[in-house]
Length: 427
Image (cartoon, rainbow, N blue to C red; front, top):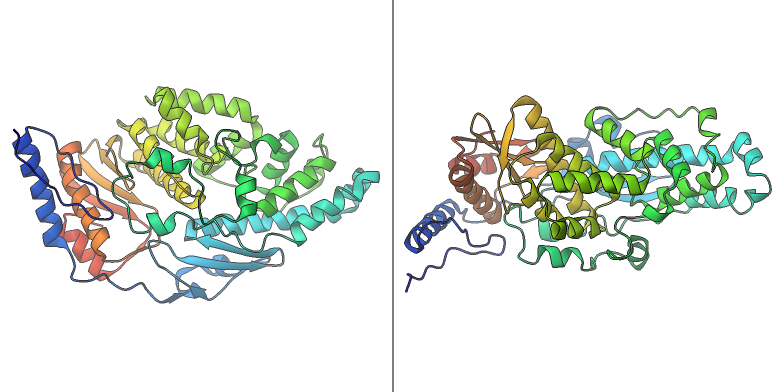
């Protein structure tokens, strides 16, 4: 009978299957457990007290159509912002999410201006009462708060380690933090694989391109405005008559954006399915991925475009991890992670990525282990230290990494930097 071994388990880390004989498995697991125990801080570093002006650029803080409230909370890895505008109040979890929200507010403004223009009113004709006012109402009376934007982050906010054993099942559960309106808009995974796909026609995509936003947006205010304007301009003839002063997307975002704007949903899905298959994703895993409606069609396209550009070993496993996303914001964390992977690959070719890990850990051809963290703030907590210690050992053992570094734009506290350095990480 093999020896019994009980590796360290916590609320954020599962047991570490390190392979080999029963004795080797036990010994390896105990070594990891010992490392985690010795690295544990006596207490979690407290959450920071910051204001928006301290962590944002002037353009992020205030623009022609938005203002970020001074009060900011940072309960986990992300700053949580409140954004006010003439079109309502929005929540943004993280600076990358804030950039998207600001772009969407600017897009709503431009659509509002279009709906009030003489050209639009003339085109609307007799349908103005029903359509024109509908478009205006959509941008004047938005849902005040995106209640579900942080859904899942109370769970993810303390766990960047192994995925839940129920990841695929949890992805199909309702997010308890969504409002009834958001649940209705989201639809079920079996009937609507991504937000709003059925309502996104070519006119919606053209106007989304015009104002530089995602046609499959989860922002109900923007979605209503796009659909309202598109109903009047079904032929798309009006888009060329308006000049929209919104900066264009650049880099990979522009490439994917153009693809999403110019390709019908069915063709886009087929392309995504082909890329998933080429990455080694099984039919069952691919179906679960495409049915997770926390992942909009645009998010799915961004994920698969980035992984297709890199083609790392174990890409299919990370698709399974992404499939476990239980909120739109958690899904965005994974999207940003794979786009960081693509950027890393252009500088240093990536060979493989770590399996069963929410934090994306890559090894390059130079055997550098790199953890990619698209977060705002890293502080010393028991769970963070445990996770970084575990993936340090796994990156060396499973990926053959001979050096370790963290790539992030986050503020890293001195305590966190020292604790992660003790686990072998450099910045």
